Image (cartoon, rainbow, N blue to C red; front, side, top):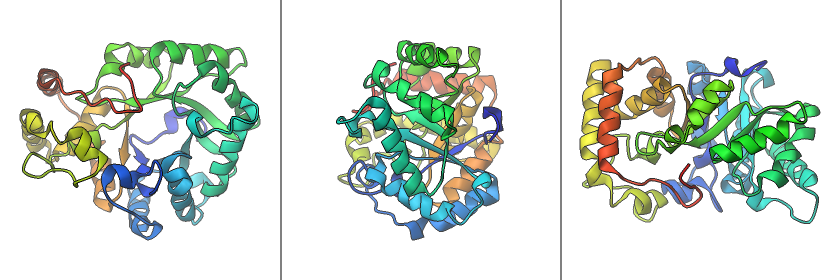
Length: 319
């Protein structure tokens, strides 16, 4: 990947691939192993989707380990790796620079690579402290591009200023962005990204399945999962919006999930889609080819705004 415009239209997320502490099994109510994902990866190769997103904290390394065991079978230049430095699990007994290096070293070992295409500060726990730790990684070639995740506009600008003094720049922002959570848009972050040549990665575009059309009051999320706790009481209220997405999908031969993904693309973002099944990869690739009309976008956004459901999770904040 020589530059950020070489990115595919959709990134694939591997959070759910790791189980245990901070693992996807706690959110999705399922437990996965490497064997479950070989067909998923094969489908991604077939569809030309080669950007994989993970983090050291997902399953405390389990997601990276599983992904790495599959990636090792492919040439390094055939895929892109996006992984993250999470301040909350950093080694506080060493300097910030050493702590960032240590976490990247762990990620590289688990992923079985010698560099990360995109490396993110996972959240703005301390912008002044942690952002400088990326500078030696970028200058040594251990990371190709720098991203910040879950940062508001002020924090993004602060990080950009720190990096700018070293001759570097932010090339990607990754925030929660969906029909139900457009705070990065209303806060001016999308505009800032467009003005500064930054790619905006939209995660939770499907609200972890709440906008997929698969779940409603009669078909709830798995009992005991974080999804059930977060969205369970709101599923009935999403009915009109999901119905509109189904109607729009009829025109394009698409599911509500694909319409949600196409909406994110139409808004100028790169959707990050968590995948655990081959069909989800195939659907994401097809969604990238849908071109929604302005009136379709407006209708869905108006319905979403009318619902007024908050989907901000415990690790997030209003942008």
